[in-house]
Image 1: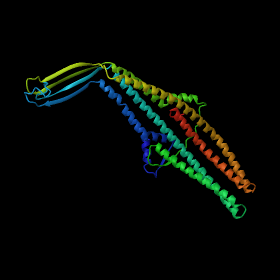
Image 2: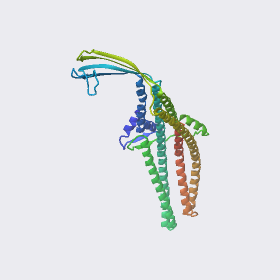
Image 3: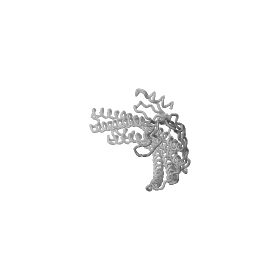
Image 4: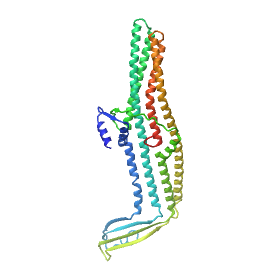
Length: 422
């Protein structure tokens, strides 16, 4: 929390630069994101419901005072029934109610509510993982966009040199205007590449700003993260780990437990309810020959007989909800297994592309050097040189992107596993 406060203070003005490592960005997001705060308040509110249900098992003691003014000879009211209430008096007392037994139904309902409160905590864990995955994606997207920006800027410089060279040769009538047109087209394509890279950079910074729970976008200065090259040899152990760790599955398991407890409680509705009630008090001011105190106690037994099949319908409803949760859990497990396998394959493929794009860049750079030499010697055409430039730029973009694409896909795999590290 202290780090979040310091970083937020640093972000107070957009003119300030927010320096972040990946770990600091994650910590700031977890401490500052309003969605997590909202879920935390909801979970804390849900944790109060079991207390409210269990409160009915405790003694219910209340106090009161009442008074009335009546004609001393009044004994009848409009309904024709006599009542001792029609006297002038002031009195007060205490009333005690205690549930003796409902055969465990209230406790089952409290346990069911506790299970749902625990399920709400799993929702928080799931949201934390999603936010961390968003932070990682935005963080690496910024690094990738900055590398692409540098590649585009270097490409513009290189192609500007070619334009200047061909322009000079065209002025000397050593090259045709077609060559100059091709060179300028290549330069324009490099400028378009720079524009796209800048746009990707701004979009990634906006994404990181939202992932950190901030409103105003600061100027980010982020540190690169070391490349983790280790990946498990196969996906199946990861699937097993994900099915055990994913908070969504634990949430559904707790929901299933809560519904099962609720079903048992609903079945106990047909059983009697036994309760105790007692009152005691005094009447310090009363007209007539009445005692100045009172007290009574009793036990009540309530047995439901007919209710229009209400209890049966409630049991059926909960039973159907249990079946629904079981099918949701099965479907979620299948989708998690699929997502883990897909994320693993994507991450492994991205890792392989790192080395492949490095080789591609080396070959395309060599090809460009040869094409440039042939063009300078008059042995090659501008089309050959342009194609070599395009190949070399595409290879630079692929090589620059491959490393960060792997980091992003590795982060997605970590999220699919439902844990903080891979």
